[in-house]
View: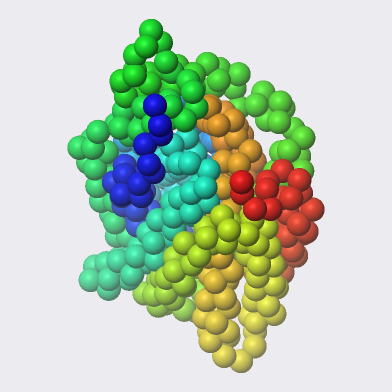
Length: 427
């Protein structure tokens, strides 16, 4: 039996629509978390620490997420994650102090980890290699589209209600929308299971070829693979994770620091709530516009051609921002550099997901992808904490400069190890 041809339309609803709805909510709240924290009496450093809780939550959530997804399936895991996120958002909405706000944001981070890994594993399994980078960069682009739309909705909600905390309701609505879409759609593993079974040559028993049967056997394989646990998987893959994984962690760190530094910088130079949302929303549009170009570059020329410009641009942009805090026209410099950082980030859309997919076991990707995401999310979680600590002891400018240097170190590591572990040009 020949493989069914890959069709982009087949991925739109099950893979992209729930992700978009979830991401719109996340894009609405992230730029506003430091402002909400500041309104509750937090210092700039504590506001950065609270924003870091979403990345720390993702790191902690990575530990059980592969195990959970393997046992209950992607759709069920995503629906559950959406409702867990709603619980965290309710806590954040009614939080009377920065501590409770941090707890709510931490819970949202845990839910985000499960949601994101479920989509990543699905795309890795069912998308053929010649389309992989474009598919995964499109998934990354869906996140970026949400981060583009979300701040504009946040600005409108703040303008109408006069309350910054009202932005949490946007994410609640996005989570409910994602859950409803997933409940109404057929389980993706049932829809694509037969294609997957033919591609991997697995899942055939007693001549049965039904989609449901293939999905069942693949699910059993995932359960068996995940039983070894996250940390044992990390140990088993310590070679690649210690080398290329370090570069991935620095990619995650640089990206996360950008997401934290921009709203903190806006607070520190006195930009208002609505204007902060609008500036970050416009920057998100630049970021989103490049997602497919990134996938084309990776599929046609190799992973490095996307990774290197992205990391050099992010590192250099953060270093430039570090020197602009006290200059004349600091707001204008902030806007220009925010747009440049989005350009650099956009050209690397999907690079971590694509590298992880390249390295994962093709028949059972979830265990390695969980370890890979944990490695990169370790950087994503550590960077905001570092930013908060340096801001508390020195200044936001010093913290920004340090993260820029780490971005350039990450670029050097990728330059050294990507050709060893990933093809220059995918075969």
